Length: 293
Image (cartoon, rainbow, N blue to C red; front, side):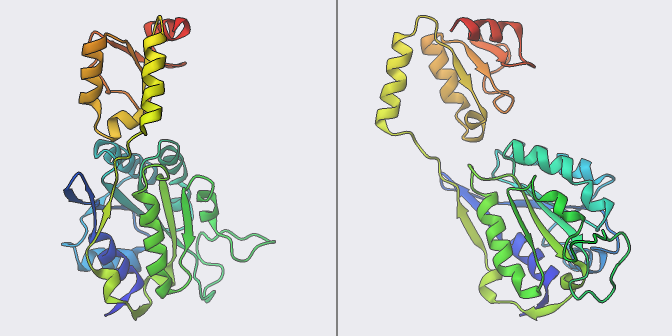
């Protein structure tokens, strides 16, 4: 099928699904975007032409839309994500703080900032970063250290491997975070013969890895031998949907629970075993019990 690179990417994103425990759901809930010359004629037109594929949500702040996308991923237990598209220049650099938050907290967010012309026809273009020592750099380089995966799509056919690699990271529960596909504005609008297989529905299995018997036995021995045991509930309890199992364990043993920032909500706040968060932003009770555990 003859499509622009942007059209192919939008169709691909709409066809991505995840499955866990036999339950299948669409991965991308939509696309936030603020448009300028770096993305309006490419991704903007692709979204406008096919609104049934990927719902567009208008944003007022690039940083705000990434934070919102991270919140969406957290509430979906990382089984769903949002895409975020911006123009080049300050529109792209405004993504950095939100991208850092998503990466630090292992929350899947797909960033699609526009980029300078791959053809170097207009050079420099409006809001282009001009460095005397590098002709292939743009402001999107600022997203490299805060992204779990970064790629720049220099040719339209490169959208195929780039998008697949992006999904590989986004659905990996250990490696996920902000994924950036820098998209030169001329490449977005270039047409190519897109492989049919790239556009077909693809279901990514998200496993629920279980600890081996030796690890469980070691944990049981440590708890039985402890005089003042304390459980620390992290984000894995929430994202693996193990909160009910934790509640049953606390009900049967009475062991108190402290939570990390990602693990907040592992137990109801009024549960007898809930001490609250640990650390510098934690509660007095949780830190006192942890110090004596």
